[in-house]
Amino acid sequence: MTPKHSCFWNCIKAFLVGGSICLLGEILIQWYQSMGNDRELAGLYGTLSLILISILLTGFNVYQKLGQFGGAGSIVPITGFANSVASPALEFGVEGEVFGKGCQIFKIAGPVILYGIFSSWVLGVIYWLWKMM
Image (cartoon, rainbow, N blue to C red; front, side, top):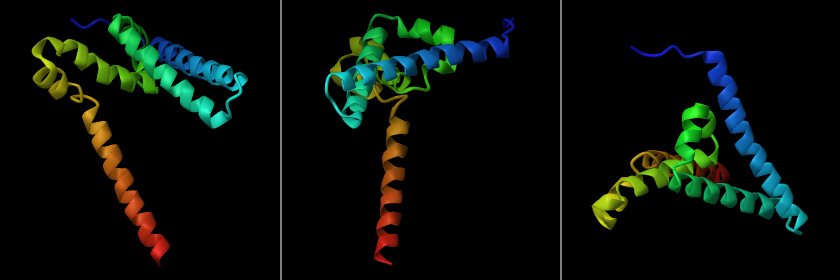
């Protein structure tokens, strides 16, 4: 028997978790800007910091608990993508470097990377053809 879930409370929890992650990102960006970096460089450092924090929390089995509580709020920001890459690496690490980590690390994130790169290539070709005309 499946337990009943409240759509309203699930949305509230997703908003709180996703909003907290984004708020942390903005706090990091403001902190990096206060250290003398411009907005673009501070944004890059903030993104990299969120990825590092997500991977560390995944390694300590905290991000999974955050995901169970916040649902989609934990997978929408870039931290969810970092978690989807780091989780299989941890889970299949015992099977070896090549057949464990190497084969499984992009199981979830691979299609996102593949179609992201492919679509950017297609749009680049279209843009190039448009400029040639």
